[in-house]
Structure formats: C-alpha cells, structure tokens
Length: 591
Image (cartoon, rainbow, N blue to C red; front, side, top):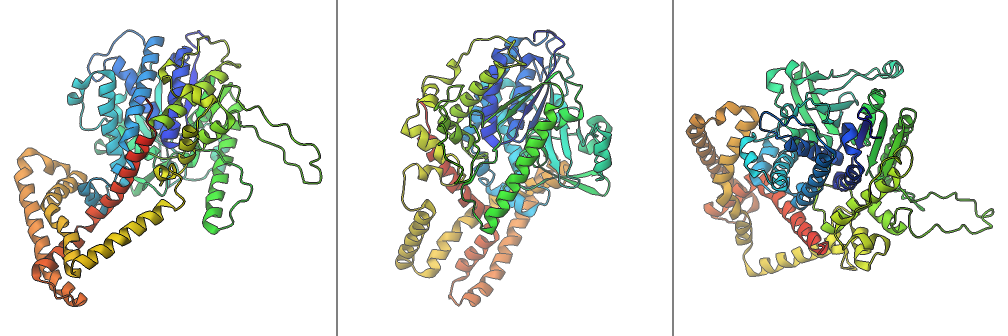
C-alpha cells in the first residue's frame, strides 16, 4: 500500500449536503491512513462535487495557488490530511448558508431569472456556490488576501495543474440531449468516449465530443467552477437544466444532475479500468428503502418507479465495478441487514433479531435515520452534519480494516468530532433521535421537532387568514391593497437599475465596462420612467375593472406592484424557508 506507484480511484457520490458531509468523514479516515495521497482521480457527482472541489482547491492552496510559481516539493501525507481537514471545516461553514433559500433571496436576481432565458435557478446556485466556497476557503486556510487576486468566479481552466502528486478532478453531469455522462475537468469538458466496443454498438445516440478548453471557441473557455458544480447538482424539479449554447453548432446542450446517469461517480473508472489499481466508492446517496404498504396514488407510484430505476442503475454500476480492479464500497446503509421474508404459513420460527449495534459502533436505528436524511442544499444543523461526517468516518474505518485496504495502518482518532456527538451514535438521546427523524423532510423540519399535532402548513394558513381578516376589518379594501404593493414602488428604481446591469452581464458583457456605466444608468432611468408611465396607463383600467373607485396614485401603486411581482413574490417564499432554516440551525446546535 505504500508503493508510490499504487493508484487509487476515488468516487464521491451524489446526495446533496448529506453526501458531502458523509464524504468529509470518509476523507478524514483515508487521510489518517495515508491513503488519500495515493488517489489519482476524484470523480464526483452532485453533493460529492462540492466536497471534491473543496478538497482539490485546498490542495492547490497548499501548493501556493493562485500565486505563481507553485511549490515544487511533492504533496505529502500531512498535506492531504490538512486538505481533508479544510474540506470538513469549509463544509461546516457553508452548511449555514442555505443555498436553496438564497436562490430566491435577491429580488434583482429574481427579475433576471424571470426575464432572461440565459439565467436560471441553476446559474444563481452556481454563482452562490462559487462565492461561498471562495469566502469560506479563504477563512479556513487563513489566506484571505488571495480573494482580491482571484477573478469574480473561479474558472475551471484556472485549476488545470498537471502534477503526478495532485489527483485529477472530474465533475459529472448528465446531458439531457443524449442521456450520456458529461464530464467537467480542469482541462476541458464534454462526453468522453466509452471504452467498450459493445457499448458503442448498443448506444446509438450522438455524443458531444470531449475537448480541451484550448481547443474550443474562445467565448466558451471561461467556464466557472461554480456552474460546473451546480450542473452536477441540478436536481430535477428544484433546479432547471443548465444550458450551454454556441458550443456545438445547432445544439443547445442542457445539463442536469449527474445522478440521473451515474449517481455513484464510477462511470469514468468503468471507461478506463486500467487507470487505477483500487477503486474506493464513498456512497452517500439515498438508497431504496423497503415499504410494507406502498402507496398506490399516482404521484407516489411515479416517484417510487423513479426510485426503483435509480436503485437498479446503482446496483448495476457497482456490480460492473466489482468485475474490475479491487473495489472498496463505503455506503450509508452499511450495517443495515436485509431480511428474507417467508409466507405466513412457513414462518414457524421467529427470526433472531440483529445486534443492536453495528460493527462500527452505531446503533442500527440511528444508522437508518442517518441514511434517511434528506437530499438537499438547504441549511444543515451542526448536529446532523457532525453525525453524518462521523458516520462516514466510522464506516470508512471499518471498511479499511478489511481487504484490500487492511494493510494500511493508522490509529482511530475522533477528536475532530468533539465530545458531544460521538457517544450519541451508540447511545442516542431523545434529542438526536427526534432531530434525525425530522431531518428526512425538506420542508417543515423545525416544526416537526416540537411534536405539533397540526401540520405547520395548516398553522401558517390559519394565521395568514386571521391577519387578513383583521386587516380587512381595520382598513378599507383599497388601502389594504395599496399597502401591500407600495413596497414594490419603493424598490423599483434600484431593481430596474440592477436588473439592467444583470441583463447586460448575461447578454452583452462589454457594456459593463466603466466608461459605459453612465449610459447604463440613463437606460435604467428611462426604463423606470417607461414602467411608471405604463403603470399610470394601466391603473385606471384596473380600477374600472375592479370598480373600486381608487385614486390614480393608488392604482399606480397596484400596477407597479403587479409589474414587480416576479421580484418580490419569490422573496417571500425564500424568507419563509430562511426563517425555518434558522430555527433548524438553532434546534440542532452542538455545544
């Protein structure tokens, strides 16, 4: 295992922040065993792309990036241990940012997403991930001065550092056009050709050829790392596919969650089975769970069928991986044994219940709860984040004690996890069980902790109705509406100005040069006046339609509020999710 030529391929699965924290624990154990420095390729999907990118950036920072020249001395085991520590610390900071809610927290960006076909929720998430990773990485590494020397976004090609001691980074997405695996690397992007002739004979879909950034059009070379991560994590339904235009003539490439094609990130290794000697798969994905009475409602059936197909793909991919070089699989349902269910007439002898504790020191009911934590990019509490990381660490420690990794030696050291969470995984208290039980849902987690008998949505609707009745009794109808939309007019000049800059940034970036700023401000002011004129013209027609007898000022306020609806309506939803996230963070605090 200490041979310099020993090559490890590391796959980090998808699964949102759940998978990212699980991977952080796995990376910590691999670093303690001095195995991480033997990793030659890190293949990442979705949440694994977040963890893998932080690890890669941390290693580059150790080498002195973005300064030139880089450090010439090879990376050591201690350097990889520092990078794993930085990865864990950055994730613990980013978890508070609530990426999912902040997508809609900026009214200017909301208008941009509403008006521009080139800027979607996925682009917004990519911008935030890039900003958050840069900020928190600067704090974790104590090198904040570098933030001023890096461009507004980190471009993939900026990370193209070819060294034998530095692992290669692969971020996997899925092409909606062809259904193939799309790969981002620091040196290029596209769909790499399959190795097997039989696969090429079966798969007759077109393939978007992988090319180096130096070989493609100049206007397509500056692809941001944050967008690559966002494309890899663009979960269907929550995020729109990320479009890449003008790269292939006549085609708009739409990219979505890499988990739709390969959620474990093993496909790059299956396509190049001779590029590594051992494959380590850190699988923090949500695996299919058993249901005693499956729902027969149409939405539930469709969701279950999709889950069955995803689980089938996972099993086939991992079984194929086992046919190549040795495979070490570290996954969330380790220690949760399956059962053989016999017909009622044949079940004469009661089954022996399994041991309460798993072989790696986690109680089985706690392991099930950890495996069921939601797949999301919202706020993760310190309690669930540390439980996930420690669970990944312990499962990795148990797996590394078995062949083919059993020759690696290193003491188990959980001091990085503090003193609160480690004993709770074997002997949980009510707070941990309740918190992990609520962590499986995306909306309403904080309210579930209090055991309210009424669903929190019903409580919110009732409260909103009560306030509406009180307002209607206290104020005339027209004043209620005027107060609601007045805020839109107050923010309208700033919104118009900022959205003008945002649209120019999306459509024609040369306009953003300093010498063009007065022209842009004049255009924004003209657009604002035009909208006010439109509101004044729309106001009387609206008043006649409602027969409300409103004044011109009031109808102008109403019309202006309707015109700015795409900006502030998503903001209200983001505020609700943000408040819930803050409550969730407080409930899951760890001393």
